[in-house]
Image (cartoon, rainbow, N blue to C red):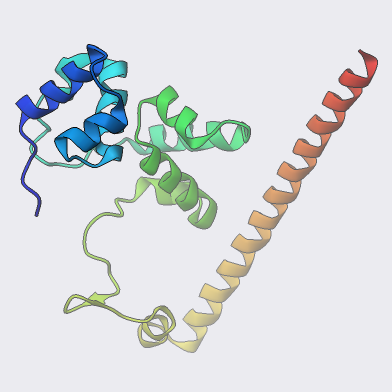
Length: 185
C-alpha cells in the first residue's frame, strides 16, 4: 500500500505550475513524482481549483452511481459514437474508467446488468483463486441448464450483431450525407 502524498507537496507543485515556474515535465522531474500524477493534479486543479484538489477523499470508499444514471450515460455515448470516453466523462462528471466499464457491461450483458453491483468477491472465486470459466459453468449446471445458457448467449450475440449493423448503417449514412454536403459547396 502506498503512503498518501502530503497535501503541502501537492499545493507546492500546483503553485509552481500556476506561477509558471516549471512545466509539468519539469515538475515531475524536480519533485521526483510520476509525470502522469502531475498531469492529473494539474487537470483537476484547472477544472475545480485548489480546494477540490486538496480536500480529503470520502474515507477511501468507492463512488456508487445510480443505475439509471449509468444507463443514461451509456445510452448517450452509444447514441453519439463520435464522442470520446473523455468527453462523455467530463459531460456527466464521472470517471473515464467507470464510463468505459459501463459501456462494456451494457454491450456484453445488457442494460439490466448496470443495476448490479459488480465490485467485491467474484462468485467464481474459491480460496482466493478464480475457477476457469467453462469449468465453473460445468460444475454448477446440468446439461439442460448449460443448453439454456448457451441459447441465451446466442440470442444476446445476435442482438449485439443487429445493433452493430444498425449502428454501422447510421454511421455510413451520416458519412454519405456529409460527403454530399461537401460536394454541394
